[in-house]
Image (cartoon, rainbow, N blue to C red; front, top):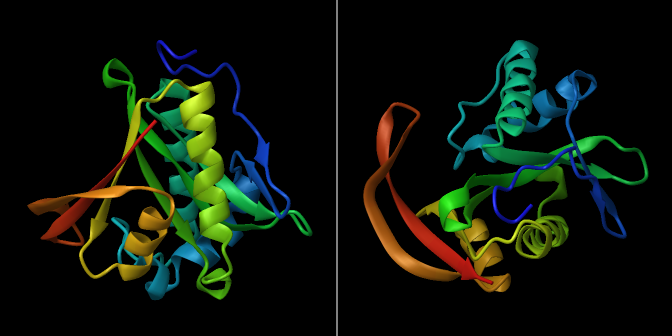
Length: 181
């Protein structure tokens, strides 16, 4: 598995509070609820959702990415009700044994340690099960909460990539963080 990152089936992960699972069309309303919040999408390379069809299209894109072997995105669900409250995952470069991590969480669950729990869980999976050597994250400069999360998890800033990201109709400076195995 560590040579090509191909996963024969979608891995289910869990922690004391959370399930990490594949998203399905049954999750469309929950995903719409998360991504229709401008606070959640402010620093995201997605526009704020205005229609449930956008959530359905996102679920389908993520499923295709997994089928192609380009990446994986787990839905984050609370164990008590199995309703999605966010997502996290990787896109990867198999030749370099490297991945980029991404994540988002419903604003009502911010500052509860959920994303620390979630990202540390998938990082452990990536390093131990997928053979990753390092993981990068690219963060908009004003996204202080995300920077603090990455630093708490042991990531180190590699500096600012000027005008590196293009989304929401404009270029953005992104700070790149890296975590080595």
